[in-house]
Amino acid sequence: MAKGAFAELSTHQQLLRSAAIDGAARKNAAPCPATEQLGRVVARVGAFMRARFAREEAPGGYFAFVCTAAPRYLTMIDTLRAEHDAIAARLSLLETRTAARAGDWDALLAELKSIIAAIREHEALEREMLRDALENDPSWVESKLE
Image 1 (spheres, rainbow, N blue to C red):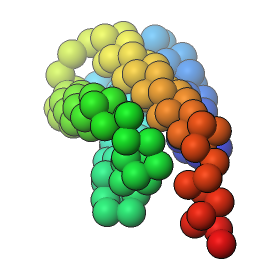
Image 2: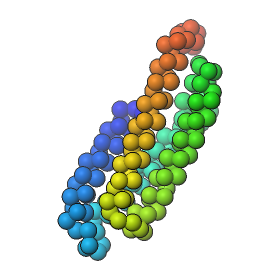
Image 3: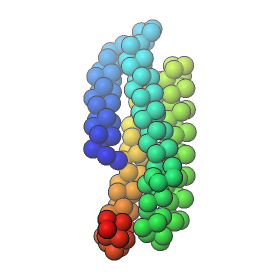
Image 4: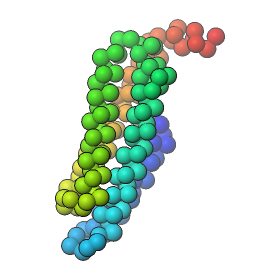
């Protein structure tokens, strides 16, 4: 994930912290501005990640590059693609739950934090695969630069 993406998630986490304080103070209030704010954050994270996944899976994207530069990662790419689907599904479900205000505040917030942790782990694996592909086959990169 690019630095901009981590900055985006960090911004969302800051919003979550302020929303959590507001939400804890107003759990039984209706409508709860914190839940509405959480819904907006979840929708933004969902849209951001779905667009990112689409770019990575597109022809010429991350997956295509890694498969070409390091074919040994073909099965890992399938795993990453499945993770894209799983993360996107979790985000969609959480978007639905926050929009409907279905579930208690703490559970909704915990699920978003869990999803963000999964995204960070996923992105760390993608970075490691890319680094390994570039370091272990520099001739491939050099041939593309000539």
